Amino acid sequence: MISLLTIIFAGWGAGIVTGLVGASAVVIVTPILVNFLGYSPYTAIGISLATDVIASSISAYTYHKHGNTDIKNGIYMTIAAVIAALVGSKLSGQMSDSILGGSTNIVILFLGISFLRKPIHQRIEDFKEKFDLSFWKKRKLFSSLFFGSLIGLMCGIVGAGGGMIILLILTFVLGYSVHIAIGTSVIIMTFTALSGSIGHFIVEASVPYLEVVLSCFGALIGALMAANYANLASEEKLSKLVGTAFICLGLISLA
View 1 (cartoon, rainbow, N blue to C red):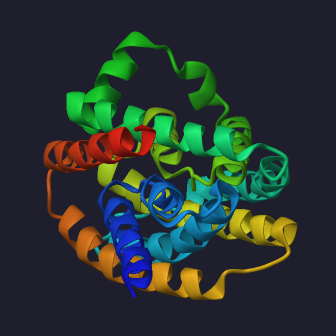
View 2: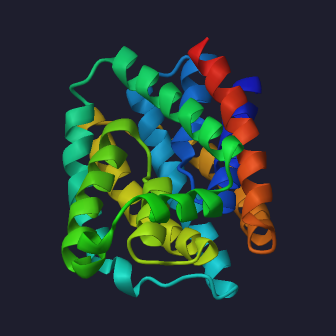
């Protein structure tokens, strides 16, 4: 019973971070399943990707209700990411458990420190002042295909739906506001996570149905709660809240 409740809690936490800032379920579900319940990183990543599908789709629906989505410029990115995610899933199956688990924990810690140090919207403005992005802005089709492929590979290999990377691309390259970028990124992430999870379970030749259902149930509740709150909260408040949680989880997982 404790294990079942833990899986539901992991899914709920994944729904929270996805609804708040469009982050992938991998930052919550994978370390909890691996470090506390003894699942292999590869299986945990597959469950995380399946959880991402629910968390992202619910978040996308909520953001759309508030008028904070625009999928038009993300179609090509989605296509490239979905194809690359299938390739990444096969590569992931050939990597050792220690590499998969360690890379996931490092990503979590890095994201936490980044969020806590500076809000997302401020980091975007600083980045725009330091770097010339005219090359990518003038070639939006090429940029969408290129970055979409990178996102898809990352999704398939380490189980991250690519939400934060998509968010950065939409804000830096395409000039979206933060809230619209998050809403659009979770739409794209729904499809990349679906592609990645299918690829994972094909390679693994089995599906942990109970774990997927429980985690997705928690994600459904968490995403509804967080996405409604996120559409009304400031970027600074969201960044500090999620950053603190990520740092704590990352340090525990690495330890």
